[in-house]
Length: 229
Image (cartoon, rainbow, N blue to C red; front, side, top):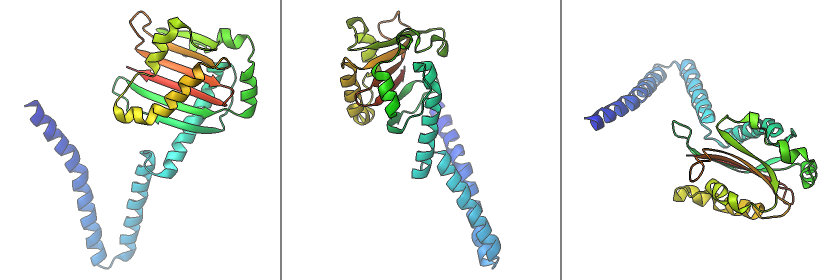
């Protein structure tokens, strides 16, 4: 019974827009045949603009992909003061993966950003408060634990938490992330790399949610890995 109702709702959901579109196309063709060309081309232009706007909002076209990627990068730049104590803009986004999110926010986001030259120099020898005050604890929920910036290979007692950030997903997802994860893991063991992370439910066997930040001054890359389960 539930399956029947679900199929019925799906049919109704699809039938309404398809039916409206069919009726609109029929009306346009009828208008064309009556010789009302100006009205026909005006209606056609409106439809093209609406479809183009929809594709843009859904991030389907190359132009929309560039625009939304730029917006996400701009948004990330505003958070850097909470993460590092410095507000700066990124020169380029070298990788971006954003999975579909469940209703409760479960999903994964992986972003790799190219650091500006001055930030590569800054992070090669950051000030002492970088390691004691950032990321800012106030920027996260009260149930999140914040591990401030550290340099060098992760400690043995952090392995379980950090491995969780790279936990396996489905085969299609991991195929896209394999090279990026491998590069992030290589960066993590460098003595010059800085890393920090925030995670939730530390009393469990592993975190439920984690945000891992990795700065590799040598390569000039900033890794941001988020996983919610």
